[in-house]
Length: 433
Image (tube, rainbow, N blue to C red; front, side, top):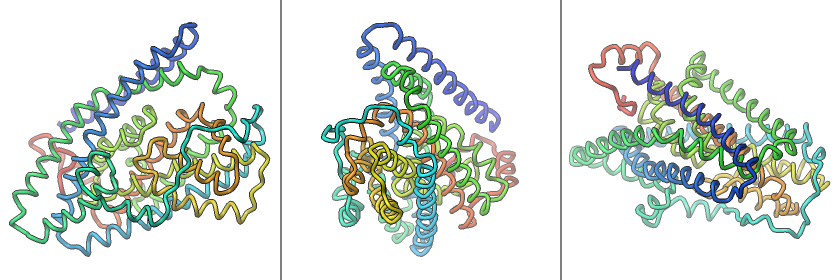
């Protein structure tokens, strides 16, 4: 059974890669055909939109069910507090590393100075609403006025907060809540099965997303921004190396197995430019890797609000790129201040459309850098978002594995092998330890 599940996973990965390749060919064919691309791009976008809506349909009940069951079975509020503290310590460290690396590389490469393009007029509008979330706004936003409203809007952080209270409440009443907890556990099994059904459509979404992007922009966009994109992707790879290197200090040689375990959700996030699309599959793969369901169902959704490593690195990279393009020099003190500002404002990214661009627009305004500079990035933002989204998945996967190890809730390879050998039926990946 295990071999069959692994074979199915490998087949999906292969089909996603095939779809990615075919999407490139189709997109370039449409671009060079000479036809009006608006209509085919609109229909291709429809396919991607439907897939992402299917994923969003899953996330709220999946997060609520798995997190509530995990907390209810913990039973101890002290355990939850300890788990949250460990997760936040890792998130802060990873965030500082991501922001600092972006700042270091953009100062080293100085891509804005090498840009051979006419600059947008400083009065031009980028079309991105510059809004930032103050600390007071962020704290208020944590608590949902209605859990139904939070679920309807897929506000993951609000769902996490409600689930924590609900899970503690279930633990507090003991056996009286057993039927409810069992029902929620059943719901989580059902939602994971639904996830498997939805994932069958992933290759179609990947094909449509890539084809639409290339049909709109064409290959010329890569020639114009070749150096900038190479430098950013190099930064992303370095960040992956640092994250896995830091994880190896905690989980040792299993870090390679962790990378292999999350390859499929990472590829899915890259292909669709959406880390949210990879959430259900990431949860499933982390639990197959050996992370406790109780830890994974708590840390992973929390990470989607507090640990967007790829997006944070991009923010420092993009702000400094625009400043360099306009010949604006920021002092070391200003750059450190910007890093600390982004450390806070980036925590409001989750659930905001084009979130990175919104945070960048707000940061540009605070440092008197022309907002029009965002126009320099809009044409390639989709291709940059692909790398950001994949990195967000990597960062949260690493965080979940590390916290599981710290909690003594990471099963060894031998334990996983024994479970597979003794299984008499397919083991659902979210089964609690």
